[in-house]
Amino acid sequence: MSKQFTVPPVVFPSGGGVNPNVGNINQRRVPTAPFQPSSSAIPFMAFDMGSVPSSSGSLGGTISTSAASASASFEDEEPLLDELGIHPDQIWHKTRSILNPFRVNLAAHKDSDLSGPIFLYLSFCLFQLLGGKIQFGIILGWIVVSSIFLYVVFNMLAGRNNGNLDLHTCTSVVGYCMLPVVILSAVSLFMPQGIGVMRYATAGVFVVWATRSCANLMVALADGVEEHRGLIAYACFLIYALFSLLVIF
Image (cartoon, rainbow, N blue to C red):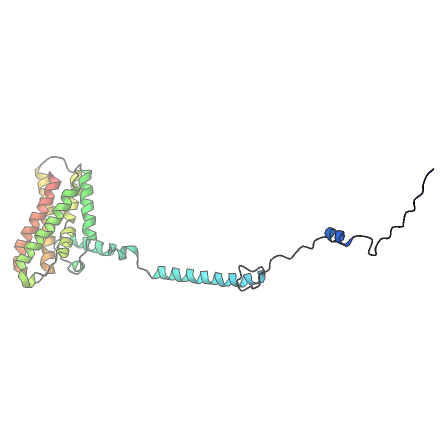
């Protein structure tokens, strides 16, 4: 015999019958807004793209202005050769004046320089090298000794009052008057080898040419040494005869 039980009715609370605690757990989370800086004073830190064009425009203007000023400053600078003290026009003018031994161009040699003598020295060494003679050190040493020798001789002859020719000017004159010897070295490449009358005669002509040019310039650059022209010419003859021996032998 079955026993019956009375089941009380189930009463759900108002609000859909769902527990409030369980409902809060199942609720969807609302996404939060991205980080927004509090101040947009710095344009590259702000997310507001409206301020970028103004800053980029000012930056472009600054760059263009600096580039224009830099190009203007480069245009105002002197050429590199002038900054180094090398003037090709002046070197050519002085070298061309040596080609005429009977006329002294004093204005061309008023400003002494060493660029032309160094060029002639390298040319002389190159022609000697083509002839099978390696004499770079010998030629350089002889040029230095010759300049000092001519400087001492000239100032001894001119005395204290007229000895106003410095060593830099003597080196410049001796170097530029090396042009006939350089030409002799180039001509000797096409002459028959060996010691002969032709080589001696050709060397003598070029030595006299260089001696006359150097003596005329030395006398013209200083005052009161006209009476010592012969002694100065003798010193110059010894210098260039020594260089010609390097070509002949």
